[in-house]
Image 1: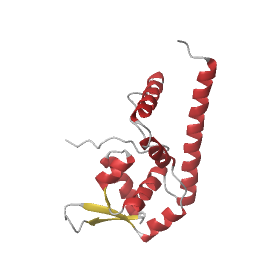
Image 2: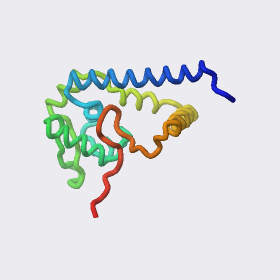
Image 3: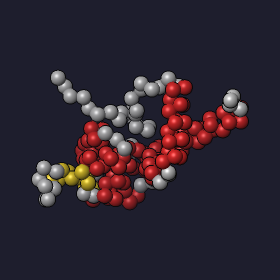
Image 4: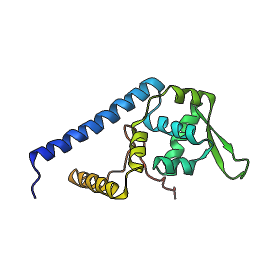
Length: 165
């Protein structure tokens, strides 16, 4: 079955819309807060779930823990989050927002990545599988299967850190 020009045009237009929304929201977030989309998304999740472990934050963001550690490092350096030992288990480090971090969250716009995750998580598995298959096909068309997945409009790559030998 050959794709019709109308279907192809619709797919291309919808991709343009997705990129446009992600780009506009990321630029707005960075302009208003000085944070990248992934950094702002992280502090929004921390605000909802604090105190939170890095592993739990990574799971909620669908990122590798090593990627999240880098984001947390930058947020901690800027004074938005702090790490503390759990009072229940001293081996566990928990992340919370500082007052400065809470201020940023209260004044910040929505984050495209967060909207995507929230929207996808409520879909039935059958619809998720269709979306997955369609996006996987687009990746193959572009020959991008081997490209490491970079966070949206960020230099961060979502791969586990490799250990130095």
